[in-house]
Image (cartoon, rainbow, N blue to C red; front, side, top):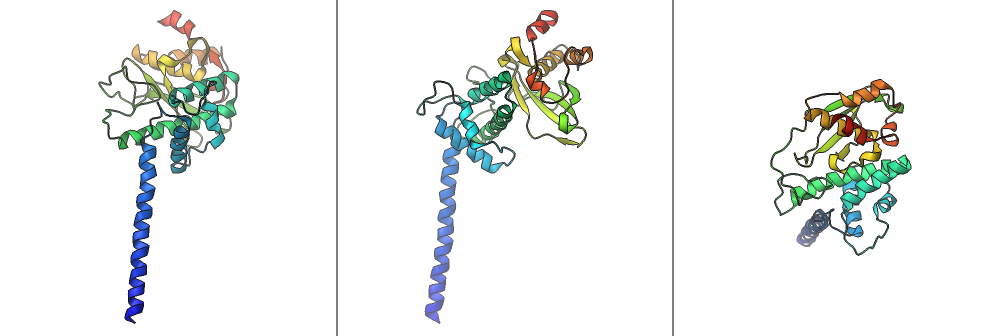
Length: 266
């Protein structure tokens, strides 16, 4: 009897210790992954970080093969890149060529990048005053947190299968006075829920000669806000019927020359 108790006790201790060591082993990769800097890493590290984030959040259900679309034309597997900038560039390219399927995948990847940045910054040993977005902020000092809940502008469009969609622009958490960044969210009026993804648009990064309507909305909302207006400039486009917007896809596939806006209102 004593022998059986001893064997049982030994076996139980073995199982407990094995479970503890398994837990510690799973902690090590997490720490390694969270130390990855998406602004300066190779493609293998970038893939590890994004797949890690995808496994944590089912909303980021991009296809693994979509990560290849972020690679630059002169890609080298051993070279370190700023994959946050490359993701934004790939999104712009997908819009320009009208590949909305690819754009949808890249939008999920961009959202996963933002989420990974948030948790990696929180776990980083280096101090960072705020969560940083896809731009390189080495040249900028973040002095004050902007009000991120105040709407800069909004509009309602037809959302295709989603029905009526309210589009609202606010400052992103990483926005600064010298480098404004706009967060655009979508709310389904028919279903009473927010859609999963949001757009993060750096005002200074917009290609004004061929801006998407989503970029146009963010740009005009920001400048209206700075001029103490609300729902002014983009509403004029909607009312004028100069551009037909029948669905959310139109906000990405149709474009506007913001140089005209600057000439008239700047």
